[in-house]
Image: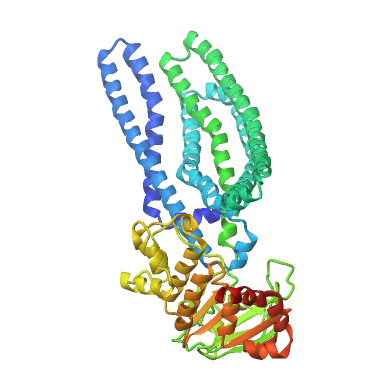
Length: 585
């Protein structure tokens, strides 16, 4: 019920549509209840009495009532569909807005496929209820009450006789609701798992084929598919046992009508017209009760889907903005980490950074090195507040980054991530993603600076060439250079490069290094790279180990100390120099 109340909250903006829906519903109900009585009058006062005038009069009235009923049903159907679509539009919007504001931790915990299942099939289950089920449930209830009233007014003794099985019918309908609800919840869970398996396979198809894992992946998907099928068969079994029982009880009601009512007609206690009216009214009584099972199933689907949908809306932002947060003024790029402790909330909460102290002067190029788990990625993820530290603080130009809005902070930071993501759009729009208002000349300048202009000119439609999903059709180096151009177009005061040159060949890397050195001039740049050239050109090298700064200085200074940097140099960087030397000679 809590879920239904929350969903009902989305109805508040549409009072006019709701009033129109109920008016149309009442018109349809009133005319529906008039039709059996008019039919009885045609038979008794017209056909039975041999009065053609009565036949014409009541038949004309039947046509008017039927047309009015049709209009009422049309307005009711359109109104309920309009309400359902508006509710789902707002719900989808709220979900998408929430997803944009949730932290990286949320996406780490929740599988992409399961999120897609919530946003599609679960939302559609809610749509089915709001666009049809809810209003039909109310209409069925009103129809039941109105029909019972008409049955009692027509012939209360026959009404009690034929209505005696109805409580049994209602009992099984409500019992069906209590059983089918958990079955639908199980289906929702299994569909989420199935969608996750499918999404992961499609996204990782290259890895699957590279390791010849197709058969194992097929078996994995088949298992999920079987689980989903079994959940649906369980639900189908419940429905298959219930609906025939409801049909039997319905048939019994009509058996009572034809036996008892037929005797009354033959005895002259009831007219044929009244009998026909009663037959029609009985359908009006039975159908809402039988239909109730289907409507309850829709409601249970929506109730099962609700917590999964609201689970997104109720997720903590984790990176909240303070109520008094202001805009970050234009920054110079002086960054300080002061006693920063950080651990990922979704893991075992083992500290990644342990009292980190680090200062980066404006315009400095900093190369951050360290082994796996040393905290390199955490350092660059904390600067734009993708995460917040548990202790300590980070300042830019002396301002605690938690005191400013996320938008004003991130608009002054350019990021080239390790894994380049391109949207299914044109090359121009991908480069201008951070600045949609950028002119074509500005886009071209950024592409030229990022060493991407040459290969873009060779594409079929140049900057208007559409790239496939995730940049399909472009090489790794080409995608990396577009990502660099995208970051440069925003002209950030702080530039973050996460192994940004690791996917390009030696010739491209050299050109890229020349361009980046010029572009990083007077710009605070933090580079995580395993390339020797990047480290050698940095103003300062920061070496991390176990979440702390163990060394910092220039490349030459750190080599002379013979510490952790020297160990990393000998294992990782020196081989690059050995390879480059013969090539240079």
